[in-house]
Image 1: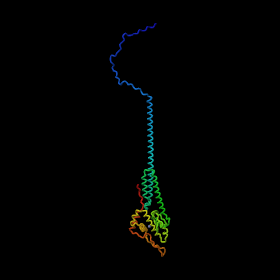
Image 2: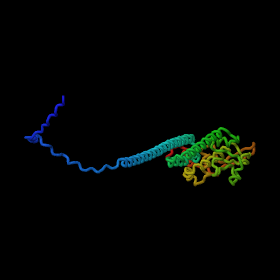
Image 3: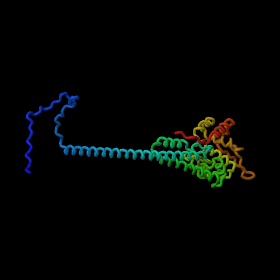
Image 4: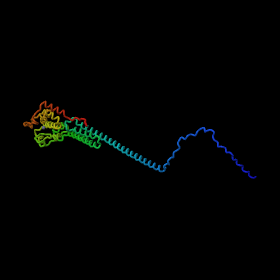
Length: 328
Ligand SMILES: [Zn+2]
């Protein structure tokens, strides 16, 4: 069969008019809310921006790291400083405690001299100086050990003095009446030297005491052997010389007492013997056999009265070391 002839195209003779809506749209188109976008500038090259950003970040990080490091170093230094201060403070506290203990020991040792009649024996003023040094240097950890050492040195000196006195009082090295009496009166702090007192004191004396060495009583050796010398006279002479030791070692109290003796240390020393040695007198008859005797006058020829003896008692009883706290 032959193909069917193509169907004739049907072209409308009158094209239908375009359809128009008979009604407007129920919803009018919304006006544009945003203006049409402006023409954006071309974005900066991305790659370049990123590089700067990185550099800035790295720099900032580096700076932060440096700052953190600096703060760390500062903190470390501060910590070191604080630790050093704490260590210094601890050292200082230790040093102050050690010094305080040493001072306490010194004063305890000094208390062993309580009542000893020699004012210059215990250097109380030196204790004050040591305490003041400790106080003034209390913030100086370097200076404190030296001051503590000085305090201990002073304690050692006092201990030696106490030990020496105990030994001296307990022995009679010269085996003489002088030493027996002086050990008893002086508690071992006064030494008896049987020597050339005449030469030493520049006068013809039975005995003497020098201001340079007031704790040594010098007894003239040749006089001590004279046939007129008795143990009672030796004892009286020892009392007289002991009074000189007291005078020299207690100058202030002695100055007051001396007014009762017109300032004469010798009549005052005689009065000490007359007050405290029972039966003592200045003039003696010493028989050397049944028909020979010596008239011996010991001292300076004046026998003190009751009033003066009372001055001596007041003076003597008022002497004596009294331990006392030390102020800074
Ligand atoms: Zn004298």
